[in-house]
Length: 300
Ligand code: CP
Ligand code: NVA
Image 1 (cartoon, protein in one colour):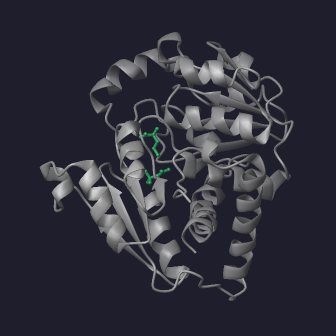
Image 2 (image 1 turned 135 degrees about the vertical axis):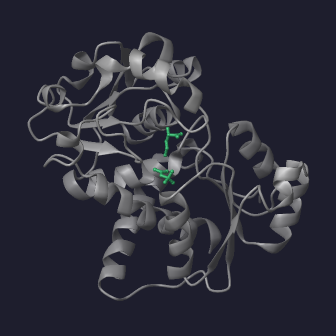
């Protein structure tokens, strides 16, 4: 049997995703009640980070420990990854020793290449293209607050980036409507637009996207690796800030999410992210529980 990986949300069926989310909610309850299952005893997860991280690193490492296993943090600065050892060789070597590999990197193709040569499961911890683990946490948060997301309307405001692409995949997999508002030149990848057109629409007016929205989501205007474009992007994205006025055009009980880190005063105002409709701290916490469900599923 070929090795199973989690590189995008499309690697799991809608039923499998719902089962993962249910297990994540259950694991959270078990942890809080002091009955923490440890199905990954003696298992190790290698974590390769070619970009910065707070949430992803801490949630995977803590999650592995809580499941009874161990995680290794590998940075390109002090491993051979940063010195040009071929991805294929790194994959073959690591998978002879560890039970799973999490990778955060730039080109999505590199994660695919690693997975193709790995005999143990590979988890995508963010690429320039997608951020599927964040979507598990976001969806868990929605399910906890509102129940199943099928039939709901979600508004994505801002960059047509990795997070936006994962929301597009989630719309297809979990059957919700996704309205995307972005500057024309920062639209999502055309491949995603075509593949998800039955569940997504793209506009360049933020007010149009939030109409009837049950959930409003945004992300930084300049992602990791785009630091030099920050000033230019700040100008172009001016009309794509989630503020009180914009949020008031969504449904009255709409929730607000942001994968974090956030830039208050840019993509979101403090009033919104620190306000009553925001569930960003639950969302951040759920990275832990959702990824524990994923690791239990892939590694045990
Ligand atoms: N949301 C997220 O992935 O956060 P980090 O970059 O801190 O891991
Ligand atoms: N779009 C952001 C998400 C960070 C978690 C980035 O790629 O930097």
